[in-house]
Image 1 (tube, rainbow over the protein chains, first blue to last red):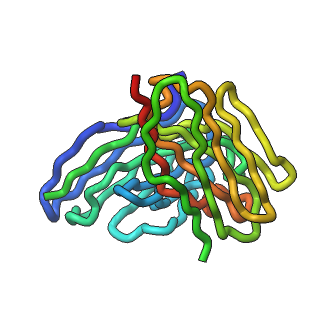
Image 2: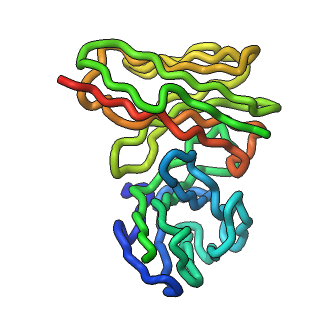
Length: 114
Length: 113
């Protein structure tokens, strides 16, 4: 099993550009989530999904869109990139939405917005 | 406001020494507390998880303790190795939903030979 994979690993955007961060898991997990990690702060939840076709907002959803058309894939779209979105983005998955179950994290995407 | 505070922010110790990292939380109600290890450039990996009824949990040289009355947890690392150099993140869940967990900002640990 590859676990949780993310692409790209690094990305530089100009303000106003759009892009999609890809996330895929091969563990048949129902729950998937996107976090951003900024220096000196804990990971913050952007969006999450409890199953195919179901998504919901987390703590910091503004400027991001998600969709979940399959169990395996959970892409994160930046609609119009801003410098405040410079961060490291992590995708995670777990068997279901119970916090007792471990979330398995991908390797992250480091995004810089100029 | 539900918060998770970790101390120290960073720590440097010599290889072979022990260390203890602290986590204080104000999350209520309490469901569970997890410690993650995050290597540089990688995603976090779970070390231990404890519920209200558990006050200690070990994973090899890592031992986590929990005092739910004082809302404090610690992570003790025994006989440190160079591979222990990483950030250690305390995560607390107020309810059983994964969308409601709160991450601490982490302690960056550096092991020197």
